Image 1: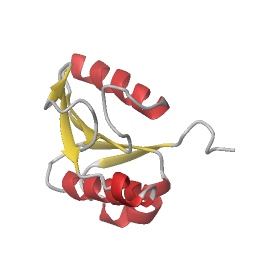
Image 2: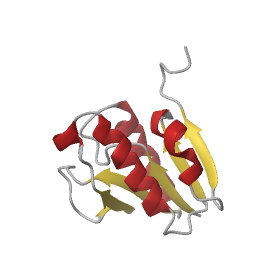
Image 3: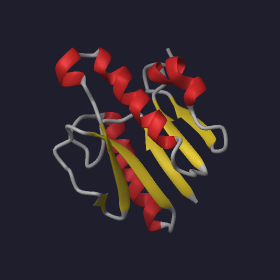
Image 4: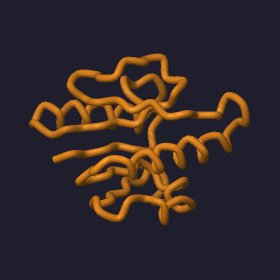
Length: 121
């Protein structure tokens, strides 16, 4: 299956929990024979096109210019790029930006949203 992970700053993990999960899960899925893509911030220190069998897509992230609001733009850029691919599954990590941009997600793939550990409270 062709699987995309959105909603993180990217892999390998240089930030936190979602990134650690994305790294382990993406590498695991790739090892099982899936075609896996992880969206990385354009500012991520790792700028290669692949990581341990996982394809990386680097998207523009203006957070360094406009602060936290840049995360919404970064997520929008990732969602718009995901429309160019024929993903079977999109795993959206976190739902803050998804609640704003959900109507722009591609219609064909199965969309799975994973909430942060504390957001359920």
